[in-house]
Amino acid sequence: MSHHQVEVNQSFPKEGWVEEDPKEIMQSVYECMERTCEKLCQLSINISNIKAVGVTNQRETTLVWDKETGEPLYNAIVWLDLRTQSTVEGLINKAPGQNKNHLKHKTGLPISTYFSAVKLRWLIDNVDEVRQAVQDERAMFGTVDSWIIWCLTGGKNGGVHCTDVSNASRTMLFNIHSMDWDPELCRYFDVPMEILPKVRSSSEIYGWMVSSVKGFQTSWCLGDQSAALVGQMCFQEGQAKNTYGTGCFLLRNTGTKPVMSDHGLLTTVAYKLGKDDPACYALEGSVAIAGAVVRWLKDNMGIVQSSSEIEKLAAAAGTSYGCYFVPAFSGLYAPYWEPSARGIICGLTQFTNRNHLAFAALEAVCFQTREILDAMNQDSGVPLTQLQVDGGMTSNRLLMQLQADILCIPVGKRTLIWGDNGAGDWSENRRSGCGITFNLSHRCDEKRAEPEGKALDLPNEIQGTSGRNGFPQEGGWRLP
Image (cartoon, rainbow, N blue to C red; front, side, top):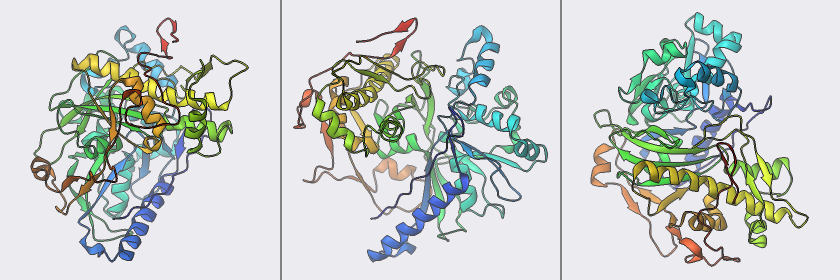
């Protein structure tokens, strides 16, 4: 098979602001589809055998566009953007008891800058073009999946305006029990329901593509972390995965009943694999900064020249020598939900060098995962015994070994082979296991890091480090 990827640029017009160009997003989609089809043809694979196109996306990133012209009315506001912090503080101050979980009984979410409703409210309040389009009933709102599907299926010429349940559940406008937009929540954020996309299941035919590579159905839609949960085959209650990307996202399948967290986690819709299938839910621990800390070390500080170099530097040190890094560049997400928090590096001495900082950065990712795993174990009452992982940072063997040591459980990643089972409702295939096999050949397509270096022969074996934590607690900083 084949693939192609294109990096989408982010812009930072002000401190705490993070944006993407909606047109560049679509151009990257078109380029990826076209280049992948070209590569398939080079492998003598007939692209007419492609059954459908699926979409996975950043979940909370928010867009508004004009349905008559097809033009975006502002850049996409990215999920970790902080411009709505004052709006969020105002909403929390007005909530009964100043409780940031005031809406959690409906949404599963705290009131936070993370989610789409406050980003949409900011756009309506601060962008004249958006406000006018809403008044003229020309505006369409969506997360990135809605924008992509609308463009692929015709755009202003009859494009399908929809989203799936996993993306809708990240807006703070969606009732995770009724599985639809909630009029009371829309009134709370003063968002007109007419601009919202239709909510569909994660696996059904949404429409036919009429742009770029034509003639294919769009029939799959999952938010990126839900897609990773499905890709790791975490279909059973209690199974969990952690994705190491820009941020870090640990999801645990809780079955067909939502579990409300008492320890700072989110309750989210994981997937709904067919119109008539029940929705499955997950507990989620979201960390804003994981892989982004490596980019910061490279682009802002010049400590590494490439992302891959950090493993070599950290391995050369073998320890942080008491240096600790809290990369709260966008505040702290789970389990604290404190947008005013900022990053800190402490424990520096004259002996500290860039190798120790590189090690501390990797440890920071692992400590954050440990915190949300501890919260998840407390909420579920059943400790996790192993963790499936994916995402770009999992190629860092030292990081994965550190993670196993800090969690004190095995950490593994695996690949899947998908068979030819058509498009549309995948629920029956899932139940019978059709089209899914584990590729467990001698090439070690499943790689597992056991605690305390049992599985991987690293240059510097890392000893078990369970229980260390360098993150802020209520009332002050708690250090190892």
